[in-house]
Image 1: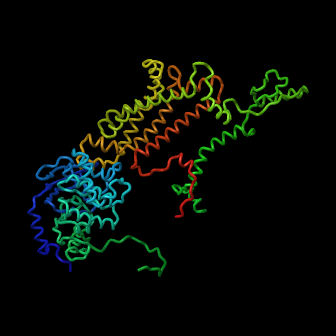
Image 2: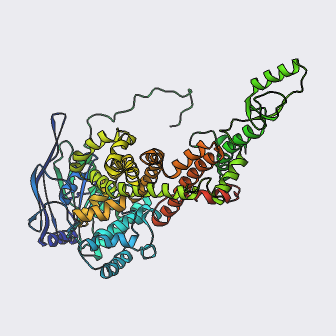
Image 3: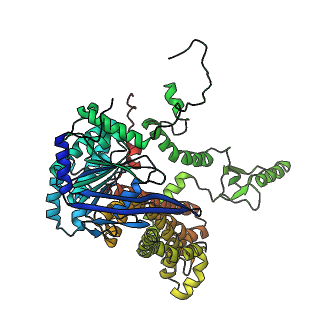
Length: 294
Length: 338
């Protein structure tokens, strides 16, 4: 029998109570996005609302094509909603800005700049002097453990290292919220697990709020405080789950009852159980008689 | 070993350093060897006869070139009359000098003064030509590069300029020759103008295209890092396309060279074109060949030098293949066993 994901233990419940008292940093109100293609209106996002509290780690989970990337792009200001609004600290978002740092799935490091100069980029854009910017960039580079590579170019780094630079680059601007659009989606399983642990470390030690987009159920449960599940076609908020897995997290919790319960519920939401038996491929037998493998 | 040899004929297959070394030398040596064969092996071509002993044929003079058929016909007549035969050596037409003659001409054109006083030396002609190219390309790039980048970055600019540029680029630059002379006189200005016209319109389109190929997610990343419009243009777009832009410029410079000969015909003929024409008038084809080969060497060397410089100034380029010169001189090491 799978445990109930809705009744966390008292310590977790207390943490959520505390979280809800924190001020709301990001307020998404009824954001709708429709695209017109070939005369047909296609709704990607349907009245999405969410609130992120200060220092919260919120995961947005959805199957591919549910419009979660569109949502984060709207929050970043790279896209405009058809209706609804996005408020950051109560002020309406109008275009991209350094107060919302963004980490993309494709690494988007500037290939012509060294690691250190990549991290300095946003600081220089804000008008900081280059000496101060360099000193701060050094700190952020060492925070993500890449001091040795500060003079390397991005093409000399592995995928995981590139993404750590991207995180350092976004954090150097001291954004109010860090938006992460499937940042570990292109990494192999081991690197991804390591990056998740790094990210939790960073989040614990740096004053930052994180909105994290993913389609990976494990990743969502492992990282988040709350999980916003988006349905598909058109995507509405399917459920907002208070993650009952206690913190600090480690990978041994993957088989703990609250983790499994949450994972199970997310699976139900993302892949609704189909009526009838599993659909099978219409495969004819092409083996010799008696050459069975099962 | 056999498996590796097969790889050479597989599309996108492996190509060992040794094979690269061999093909590199072959690509240069093959045409030279063909030229040597045609020049030095008498039975491959040699359609003419160079008269050594004219005997009693009135119009044969020592060292003149006559058709083989004429030579044999005359000798036939001489034989019938019982007269001594004319002698001669098989020869190629005057417009195909042998490699050693061209080599000698190449050397002598730098060491012996021109035939007539006031005529330019080869190196003077060359430096004049290079100046024309330089200024034509300079003025074209001064306007073409920024306009191209603006066209690639803003739909507004590309909408305003590209259709009309597309229209202009189909007009052959030499067609503007008469006009250029009428407006700019007969000396260097109209020649520079022709190089400009030949390069400028292509340049805008090529650079606009290169700019459009920039990964837009880099622009978005810069926006989320707080970069403004001008900062995006100067700190993201320009460095982002720099490598491709540089390589475009190398190709465009090659195009500028192709307009040179036409440009130099316009107004008062000058530079390397004038040199070649004069030498052709004197029927010194050794010098003509020497001049053409020098153009090739200059173009090729410039491109190699630019390639070198490019690798120095863009250290973030992923593939830094060794320079051609290094490859030509390097003794290939056997491929590492896998």
